[in-house]
Length: 358
Image (cartoon, rainbow, N blue to C red; front, side, top):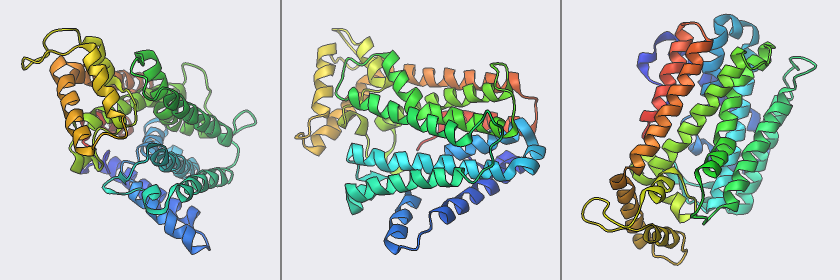
């Protein structure tokens, strides 16, 4: 798993065991007496890789509430970690339909194997089971409904996706709208994952609470994670990333590196003696989203755009923004939690968001 490594010690090993338990619960919850359903669910196993959201939830619980919190609320933490992974997996299955993607994590997508109808229904099946599992938990208080807060976050994810769809092929997309898209579609659920343990514990929800600090931590980390994703789509190794590069450009999605490039480009030189204008970059972006463009041409021109982004400093600027967000996130944790092994684990996992290759 991307966020785990042997040097994280005993608390890291405990987290590994808890994540293995989440995988088992995930499979058990989705088991059907209809074999074609089980076959479809089996495809979802190919989608699992980072397990970022359950990792954030379980690591936040360890950092904030320690072994004592798990002794009292460990079952609820495990169930909720499984629920957020199901919600995330559902969004991936649906995303592949929207993007007409054929490959994810070096394997064929559900929609490419079984068609859009089966993929959409599988995503719905995952969502319905997420709420079925969540409903098994006791309500922490009269004021808090875990199902309701998860539903609100899921609604926010959908709003982010719809906002992104509304801005496909919008090469004038500004920073504010870009960050609103990724805050909703990626960061909101990450923030909730870090907040959920506090809601289970019944902690106060004021702005100075530990839970609120963890929510802000998760949201900032989620935004940074998405920026790194956007960078990998341009500059990653396809064999490591597990999918073809330039998918964002091909689907008309303007991401931070390209926004940075468009802001920086003026008539003149961008390294290597190449004269590039904003209109010229814009025209290249429009060609990327042209369905009739041969694949080899699209790949070559996407590589050229990535080179321009690198030469102009746009790639470095986007990475620096991600680094700043991770540092801000870590400061939230340092200010809210005592210096325990659990906090050290959470900080270590945060830094690995920036160094991942897939």
